[in-house]
Length: 360
Image (tube, rainbow, N blue to C red; front, side, top):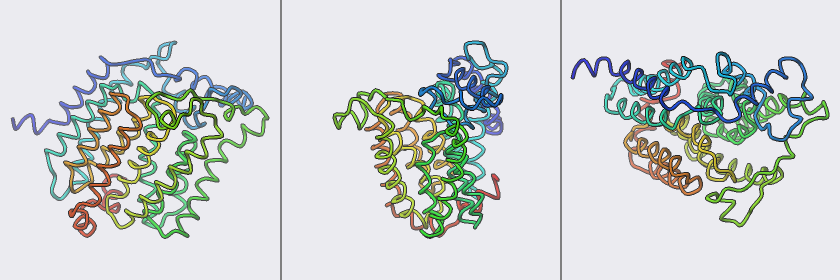
């Protein structure tokens, strides 16, 4: 038993690599994104967004091109990349729990994080989706850390990078309210939005920018479907963005004194995005998965955080975007109102400063 505990991360990494290879799948859109990345690298900017199907940011297109190295012509990832990613993801989740729960490291918490990460590998995350997008909650979390430490431009840069990965990254800009007073958060947010939007301007100036012409078919279990909407155009996206942004702003302001805000707010942003989106895609849950594991590593009431992470996994598996997101948000709200939250605010065990020193 002592050997298993001592080498638990290595064992989990090997299991993750094996499961990743067994569940390896063809990532949707990876070949097309990589082809668009080639056009970008060749300077053919007018062709990158000439078709409405391309809803990825330029940074995601470049990452997709990198992921095509060694991949099969149909886009199936190179097996060593799959194995290495899955092993690093599971071992990294366990390591993060051990680092951020110090000085009282909890092996049980670490084991639960490893198990949840293994279950997400079986999803299979991130290969059954857009791999680059799982970076967004990490960027949001670290932006909050940097904003709290007074590094506003760096925080704006991370949020801008999130927008450059995918346009929906703009939804989390209000998370800055968890780290600064409104005036300062707005100033940093404006810089972030300007930087993110600037990444798309060169393509728009070519006159061949069709991103806004797409129409989505509304999924049957989405909030839009419950409201009687059957088709969703880009011009309804600002309505969704306003709802999500207001929700993120309210949650961020509520948690502005919480030490775990840098994990809880990105999680809430991801859940609000899933819960309000008109489309049903399993990979919409993958950023939520990453944020939930980060919360599990930092929350004082880690059992409740584990329950949220598991609820997200169940919702993804059952394809319950609206109901699942609402349930996870309810659990998150319950955790914030618990008596332990007040103790967490003053304990300093999981502070962003500790996060930056130990991880960054």
